[in-house]
Each structure stands twice: as C-alpha cells, then as structure tokens.
Length: 111
Length: 113
Image 1 (cartoon, one colour):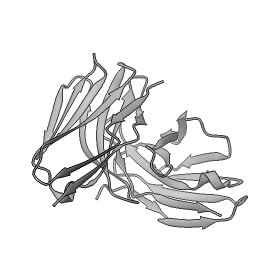
Image 2: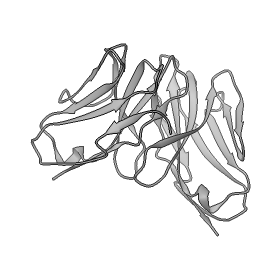
Image 3: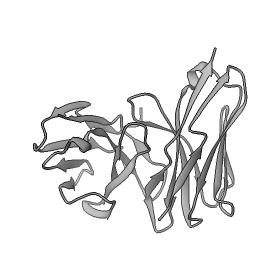
C-alpha cells in the first residue's frame, strides 16, 4: 500500500464527453503528478501540481487540465474526449524530489 | 529532454536464474533514478530509488546501480522466482524538475517455474 488512492478504478466514456479523475496523495506529500500510460508503453508525464499551482506540463493539449486542493489531493479533467485518450491514468505523489509513490491508476476507455 | 530506453523489451528465464535489466538515459543532469514494478493492469510499485549522489541501492534480492557518466542504470535480480514476473520500468528525473519522471517502455519479465 502506497497511501496514494485513485478513483474511480475503471471508467467508460463516450467520445466528446468530459471526465474527472481523482487522486489522494500520500500524507506529507505536497507534489502530485499525473501520467498517461497507453497499452505497452511507459507512462507519459501530463502535468504536476505543487502547493496548488501547476508546476510543469508535458506535451498534452489544453483540454487536459487539473487542480490541486489545500489538502494536496488532486483532480485531472479531460474535456472533449477522443478515442486516443483511452489509457491508464496514474497519479504520483512525492515531496521535494524524494521517492515517488504511485496509485493503482484509473483505466479510462473512450468509445 | 531526457530520453529513457530499456533493453530488452521482454525476457523469459527459468526460475532461479540471476538476471540483469538495463536502462539508459540521455541527459546526465539526472536527479533521481527510480525502478518500478508493474503487474498487468495495475499501478506502479516502487522498488528502488537511487539519488544522483549514489552509485547503487539494494533491497533484498534486488540491486540497482547508477552510472551517470555512461547514462546507464541496471537492475539486478538474484535467484529469480515466478512471482517476479511483471513489467519493470525505470524512470529518470531531471535536476531541473526533480518531480517529473521520464519513463522507459519497460522490460516484461517472465520467470518460468
């Protein structure tokens, strides 16, 4: 158990819809990062939040957005879903560049 | 930009064998190198973290090394067991954003009983 929890575990959405994924970070960790993992690939960095501010973004369009709350939990929002958005979405929490701990992920299927 | 490569992509070994997984990275301005295990459809489990000032880390049957000058890390698994079967991912973070990880595509390990 890493202490990082993600919800929901699985989700099916229709193309064009919007989705919100949630992550509770490990106690004491002030940094949350989101990753997208396509089948058979390594995770790709989406963005990172540090103390409620976006602190770095990968090569993802603006329809991928996020939030971090005062308790350091976080949301990933994806608008106008496309078929290629189908993937495992992973949340990682860390503090000051120490060991990163990942949640179990949310499997998103867009049909 | 950091690029991370893992070789081989897949590996099948008999139980009991010692094995080495390889990871290479392009940017020597590395902050941390972390090895993860991923079971099918699951999240990532942290195995070992090597900070840039360190050369290696050990945990049980696992030993990971880091050579910044050559841009390489290896994960050594001793006396492999069927329960070690999983995908192993290495990830490097940069000195310029040490919480952002660049991942390789992983090595899928199958340990046969």
